Image 1: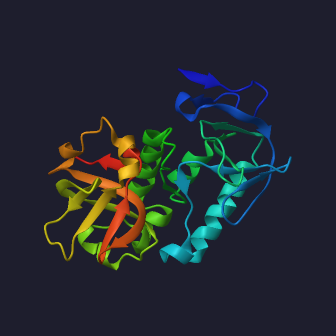
Image 2: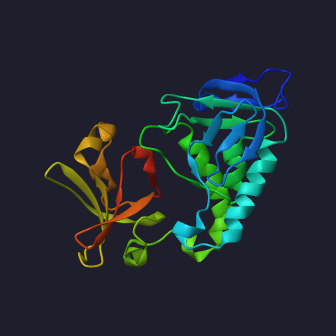
Length: 250
């Protein structure tokens, strides 16, 4: 089932998928795109596109032109016609910006992902449409479009994570060797060499989000995870706060 848009909108012949939630703002006019990717509407409200991350060369080591291109393409897409923004709770961030999916002549998130001008970035408290977003990203990765042609954005192996900058957003692909719990903290380990190892970790306060998820079933499976790199006892880690950060590859 899909929810049809108002027949008077520029997206009249297309559909909003159920996963995106219900319209929060209809027929909005985007007047500009800020450097952080926020869409500023004619009524002064700000909207952030949920579920994606635009290139950030300062933190990720990629070329600046990709960031400029992503912002330019986003601006052009958003100004192709009135935009309907959909949202699911929580609908705003702490700065009262609306967290939404945008639709006019295209699904804004998917259009950017398919051109390799964004990567999927799942929030701790929102995961709507993650399968659709991952599929769009996969199409760009297969074509080596946009960021996927740049070494610093390519999926890293766990063994290569030692060179990943702390604080950067990374996509990691590898085989899970162990899942262990200590002091309420769950560690999903990749590799057997502690010195060169890498783990995805679930903090005690985030374990509730994984209730019903069989983490032990990840052992001996190839997975792809993503998130911001942190360091603990000299080892790189990525914190998992949402099961949708995990993609099963086999």
